[in-house]
Length: 380
Ligand code: G3I
Image (tube, rainbow, N blue to C red; front, side):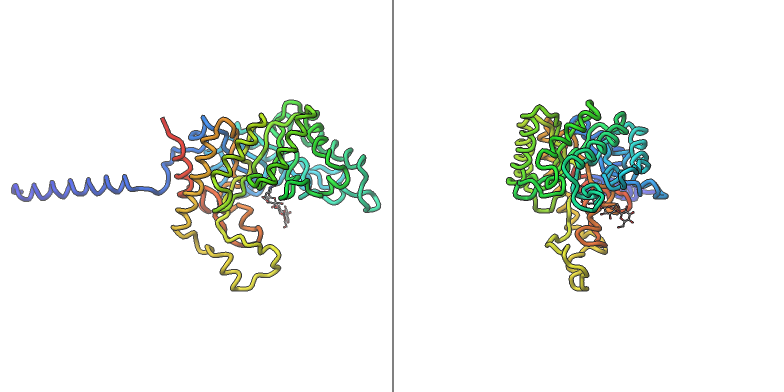
C-alpha cells in the first residue's frame, strides 16, 4: 500500500470516528437502561405509580417489571375502594387488595391506601336502609366506622398512608352534595379522619382531590384542612391528584398551590399524575360518536406524532421543575398507571380512544417525556 492509500484510509477512519461521535452526542432517544426514576429522585421525593389487579395476570409482566425497577411507592388503583373491597354489608373481598399489598411489601415499597370515603365506587346499600330509603346519620356513621376499622385494621402493618376522604369538593369550593354530606352533614370528613386515626394511629392521613390548582376549589380544601387542624384532628398531607392537561395548570399555578398548602404545615403529594394529550371538549354526554367525531376526538389512534411527543416531554419537564423546586414540601409524586396502555384515560370520558398520558409507551419503552423528567435533576 503506497503513502497516498494509507492517507486516504486514515482520513476515512477519522471521518467515521467523527460521524460516530456526532451520532452519539445527538442521540436524544431512550434514556440509558441504568437510569431509574427512584434513584434519580431519591433526594427529592418518593416516586410511584398506581397499579391494579389486572397487571398481575399479564403474561409478560411488563408493567410490574417497570414498577419494580422505577418506583418506590404504589397505590392500588381500584382494589381498596369501598365497592371492590366491601361489596355487601357482611362481605369483604380482600384478595385483590392483598395481592397488591403483598407485591409492595415484597419489593420494599411504600403502600398508599386509596380510598376510604368517596362518593364514587361506593355501593348503594351503604346509603340505604332496609326499605331502600336513605339511611339515617347514625346508621351511616356506624357503617363508616366499621368499614374504616376493618380495612385500615387489615393493612395496619403494610399501608403507610390513606387517602381518607376523596373528592369532597365541588369546583366552586363548596362541599359536594354527596350522600355522605346529605345524610351525615359536613362533619363526615372529621369523623372519617378520626376513625382512620383510631384504627391505625401510625398511618399518615390525607385529603385527596383534583383541580385544587384552581383558586375557589383550593380555598375549599384549605378550609377543610384548617377545620381539622383546629379540632386537633390528624391530617398529614393534601393530595393534588394531578390529572393535568397540556395547557392546565400553568407551572405558576401549580407552584403557588403547593406553597399555599405547605404553609398550613402539611405535606403535599402529587397522587394521580398523568397528562391528557387528547382534545377534551366535554363529549362524555355523547352516547355514540359518529365517524366524524371519532376522527376528531381520537386523533392519534395510529400513534403519537413526533411534534406532540416533544410537547408532552416539554410539559412534563415544566411540571417536574416545579416539583423539584418544591422538594421540601412535595413528599411524593405518583403516576396514575404505568404504561400508556393501562391508563384510565383510554376509557374516559369516552371509551376506546388512544391516549398517551404517562412516561412509558404501550411496549413499556421510556418515552421522550421520561428523558425530560430525569433531566430535571442534576446527577453528581
Ligand atoms: O372491575 C369491574 C369489572 O368486574 C366489570 O366487569 C367492568 C365492567 O365495566 O368494570 C370493572 O370496573 C371498572 C373499574 O375501573 C376497574 O377496571 C369500572 O367500571 C370503572 O368505572 C373503574 O374506573 C376507575 C375509576 O376511578 C372509577 O371512578 C378507574 O379504573 C380508576 O383509574 C379511576 O381512578 C380515579 C381515582 O380513584 C380518584 N381520582 C380520579 C381517578 C380517575 O377517575
